[in-house]
Image 1 (tube, protein in one colour):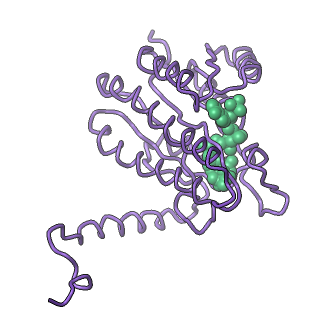
Image 2 (cartoon, helix red, strand yellow):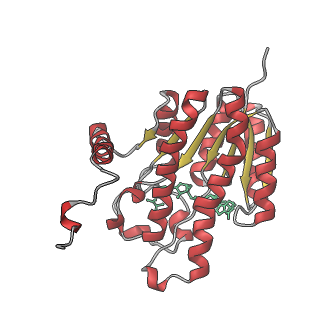
Length: 262
Ligand SMILES: NC(=O)C1=CN([C@@H]2O[C@H](COP(=O)(O)OP(=O)(O)OC[C@H]3O[C@@H](n4cnc5c(N)ncnc54)[C@H](OP(=O)(O)O)[C@@H]3O)[C@@H](O)[C@H]2O)C=CC1
Ligand SMILES: CC(=O)[C@H](N)C(=O)O
């Protein structure tokens, strides 16, 4: 009998990542749980071992710290049992750009984009070589719309979507599945951590509901999964319009409106 593959989940100490951990443990997978809060990771690991019998390792790491990030990258490169990466760790930043301290902006970009792409880069060659495996990247609907007014957070999430679509084009032919999951507002600690009061907000999605929907998309091998989007055709239309735009770009010719009179 082959042993079940291992899933490495970042940001697993709470919220969306902790529910992914619960669900993959119940599916019979071994887990590697990554986050900064070691006590919380240990408590979750103990519960999951008791309730599901899963083998659960923890790796305490601050993914904005190069040394910690390198340790997680090494685990992804070297541990051939890991066949799925859930790139979930992330944070938000509230307020107008001009009020956001530059160091906070840089830390957000480092966690939401640099860490995410470095971890994907660490595991992808091995998965491609094996011809199997999955990389799941957690984006956000905020990355679809600058109008939400969270420019830096949204930009990091636009990066996640773009990267996932590009990686899927490259890796799907090699047998590696890439999924971008785009939640909308979901009831987790992210809001409080970003100093956003959710009491005045419309209803948020439950975190279990969100992850179960994301896993339904995962099981269907969907590239882009948007649990709160009820009319799936709206996404297909948007994506098709983007592809049509590319077809209309004529590399060697300046558009008429930019031609200056001689
Ligand atoms: N909740 C929402 O409304 C939405 C969330 N998302 C995305 O979902 C993902 C998960 O968010 P969510 O569960 O809501 O947020 P939470 O704040 O509940 O959880 C974030 C997780 O990331 C970990 N984390 C935070 N900073 C670091 C760090 N520097 N290094 C390592 N781990 C870190 C936290 O653990 P610890 O503190 O122990 O390090 C925690 O486990 C994020 O990428 C977020 O952008 C997308 C759309 C909507
Ligand atoms: C803080 C947020 O904006 C939220 N995580 C989202 O992506 O919708």
